[in-house]
Amino acid sequence: NFAIIAHIDHGKSTLADRFLEITKTIEKSKITEQFLDQNPISRKRGITIKLAPVKMEYQGYILNLIDTPGHMDFSYEVSRTLAACEGAIILVDATQGIQAQTMAHFNAARKENLFLIPAINKIDLPTAKAEEVARDIEEIFGFKKEDIFYVSAKTGEGVGELLKEVIKKIPPPQGNENLRALIFDAEYDEHRGVVAFVRVMDGEIKKRDKIQFFQTNVKAEALEIGIFCPFLTPREDLKMGEIGYIITGVKDIRLVRVGDTITSLELKAQAPRLKPLAGYEDPKPMVFFGVYPKEQKDLPLLKEALSKLSLNDASLSISTEYSEFLGTGFRVGFLGLLHAEIVKERLKEEEGIEPLLTLPRVLYKKAENEEILEPYMKLTIYTPVSFLGSIMTVCQKKKGSLINLEYHKNSAILHYDIPYSMFIRGLASDLKSVSSGFATLDYEISEYKKADLTLLEILINDTSVDVLSEFVYSDEVEYLAREKVGKLKEIIPRQQFRQVIQAKARGRIVARCEISPFRKDVLQKLYGGDRTRKDKLLEKQKKGKSKLFGKSKVYLPQEALLPLISKNLDSK
Image (tube, rainbow, N blue to C red):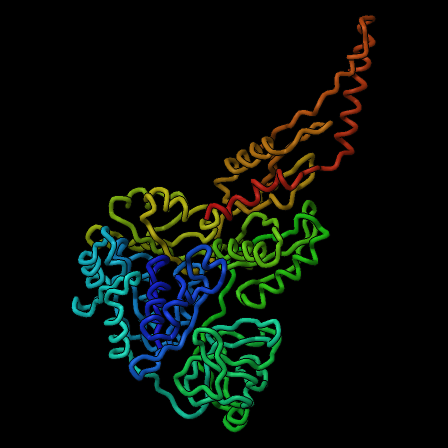
């Protein structure tokens, strides 16, 4: 059982294609590019967003391969995969070298005590720097030069030798006769319920066996079991060490938790002290958006669509919320900005719904002394040395504290402690910009720390606009207040009455501007005459507009709000 781990776009899925071809798991004529990425959005974007297992047979050996995502938003998928494997191929792009996610996945695999095989991919490209990358792999990861494989997943060069090394070096699974199976993924089938992806650690499971889930204590029957070839292929049993699936008819995906252990009902009753396998923490959503229908009549459709998505994506958290300006909607928690963008795209592609997403927010906590705490992350940045100064300047502006700096020839690795909220304020795009796209980053949430935050409210005609109010750093209040007020003045349409836009913080107005009203020419019908007649008409108009200002309701079209509340998703 092995996985392919690498930074995003280093060729994992293409290498998996070559393995399928060599082992004749799929006929060569039927293999399409990135065959295991069956998700249409995954294929459209050219990136893996969901782990994909497949069983292969080669030279008398059974090989279970799990292809993994490379983006940092989906690193939890990689950790789940590694728990189900004995080894992994760590793949490095010959043109780009070691990147941030390469290091993150390497460290995760080391924690699981997996046997690792280093391989350099894309050696067929004219810009490949295979020897230089090999020296970096030796220096940073500690591999010997003779252990490194050179392959081209595109042409197939060196792939056969790499597969033979997997058979030779990655150890076979070991276990005992008492059934314990680890759930490393799950998906929802509309007709058959939850399909649990499992690795049988101990014992074996047969069709129609009575089973029990450790965490939820749910008792069920294995209605169907099977393997991935790579599509679901039914079988009569799954033996120790095998990777496959179990369908029990359970309709609620929350009852089949990823990381839970399955055992036999009989064994659980006979051995109450039987311990579950070491699982992993549930992925915790870190970025929260308000998700609203563009028209309130579409609310039931949006609710149903989000419910459907949550059946296949247990990392989504969904709760109902209300906005004075947008009506009823949902507060949805995501793993990161890419995760949010993919869910938004799935809503459009699969359900035909284009929702409105409000300002992204992180989850703050309140301490006992009423202080506000915010989440921090340990940020790792891998960059060429030439961009080091610019990278450090950006991180300093984003309130980062440098923990460690390592040099490796022409590259540097920076470790920062930095507020997670900086991610939704364009940290990733800023780092890419100042490094001409060469810097790569990875992060993990560390702890909550005290934050000097102030609630910045936006008021229009003395009415607070809830969807634009947010917590900001106290030293940025005035700058952000002026920026928001100025942008609103540009995008809010003029009315028959005066509109006053204000930004309020700490009980005082910190920025203000006005949108002047349309003015009807009330003097048009006059043809000369006494000046007092003109003055009376102008005074009457003035009083009428004052009356309108007092009685008017704030009108904010969604088209005007969109540039302000949706900008962050597109600037990940």
